[in-house]
Length: 266
Image 1 (tube, rainbow, N blue to C red):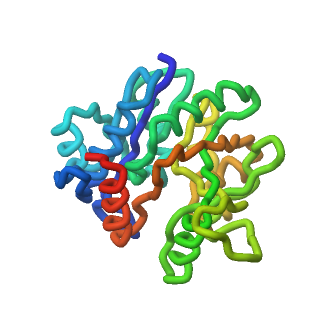
Image 2: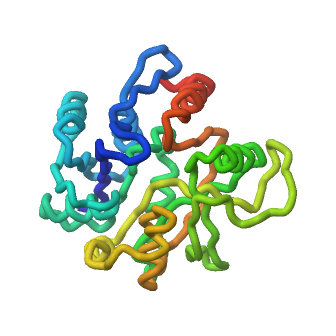
């Protein structure tokens, strides 16, 4: 097997319990659950051999199987999506070239984000894991800052080095820019897209490392790779006119539904 996409989904989210089953209404007026929309996004990616939903909850399993998804059950002890992906791959007994973690809170993720991510990891033999980053417009940066000002934990931002190696990820808006930007103006801030591509050895090693100090503080699983000295490749992706936002809080539903309507997505 070349590429496996795993969609980790848990019901007992601290900030938003039951989030994978939240309904989102598209441009046609019909609604579909977050996990169904994530599945649709995954199945639209070229060059993927298999897509599975990994969960520890019967309600999510039943919903996913109801729309035709393949489901693998994982334990309740998984602390994040990367650990759940690692357990899912082990339970399935697979040895794919690349495992993609498409977290179930980003239904607006375009297929080319994931295709570019896979190509980027294949091209960098030193990286065990890769993740996409999207340059923020002035409006996106302002929206991220507005979330923080309102006390909401929203999107994640990333900083990286000259060879695109990840240096840090934060729920704060980094780097500090020192000025405002016009809505359509490019900014130096990069929105981290919550998708990961792993080589199997890096994914298998991850659950054996203790949860890191920075990972605990930020609540960001990818920091465990950085805290253990692993190269994490950031792959810049292009929006191509598509809007992108993650569902982190109930307040994000109207925003994402508006984006679905504006883009004409069902």
